[in-house]
Amino acid sequence: MKVCFVSTRGKVRAAMAKSIFTKLAKMLLLNVEVYSAGIEPEKNLPENVIKVLTEKGYPVEGIHPVGCESLPYDRIDILITLSPEARDRCPYYINHKRREHWVLEEVKDQSDLAKLRSIRDNIERLVKEFLKISHT
Image (cartoon, rainbow, N blue to C red; front, side):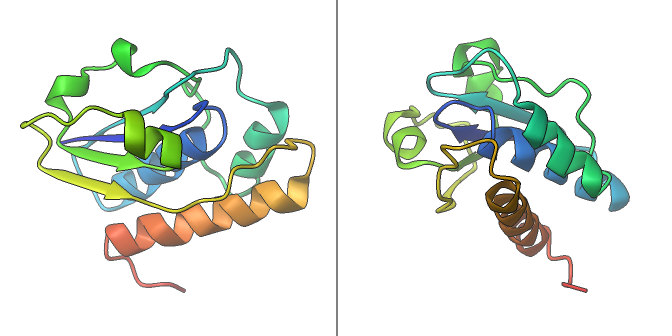
């Protein structure tokens, strides 16, 4: 199964979702390839995104913003968009078995750790709901 998270720039929401989903799916022994992308990808993952992910033990290796053209986009099984721009601009493919849009506020100030933690925790909640993991 291939899951892809797409946001506008791919450096906060999509990167966090990939990291969180990867760890939780692994804990459930799921055989999943997880991707993240941005509609208008930026070059680097902000240091504070790395910081808030590692605070909860989420992996950051191999997570960096890329465009959808860098992915096997037409072979994605589940596409989850995380911004209105991604929802509106990601093309539909018949191979996509499921498509969802999660409403997540954009974090414009990556120095705001409280806001980044809030987004991380919200994504974590959404991933747990998606994977049917009880909240504890």
